[in-house]
Image (cartoon, rainbow, N blue to C red; front, side, top):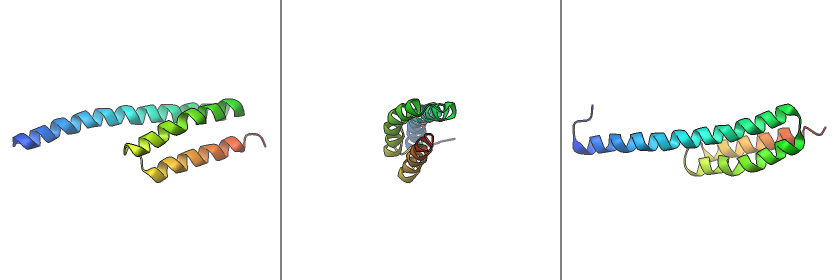
Amino acid sequence: MANTTSAKKATRKIERRTEVNKARRSRMRTFLRKVEEAIASGDKGAAADALKAAQPEIMRAAQKGIVHKNTASRKVSRLAHRIGALAS
C-alpha cells in the first residue's frame, strides 16, 4: 500500500490511465474481430470495408502506446494479405 501522498496520487493516476487503455484496447480488438468475421464469411468487399475502418483504429492504438508500432503494422499487413487472397 502506498504511504506517501505522491505515491497515492501516482496510484490514482495509474488507475485512471488503466481504464482508458482498457477501453482503447477493447475498441481495437472489436474492429479486428469485425475484419476477422468478414474474412471468415468470404465476402471480400465487406472485409475490405472492415479493414478500411479498422486500420485507423489499430494505428491510433499504436500511437497511444496500447500496442507497439511494428505490431500494429504487422496486424494491418497480415489482414490485408488475407483479404487479397480471398479472390483467388
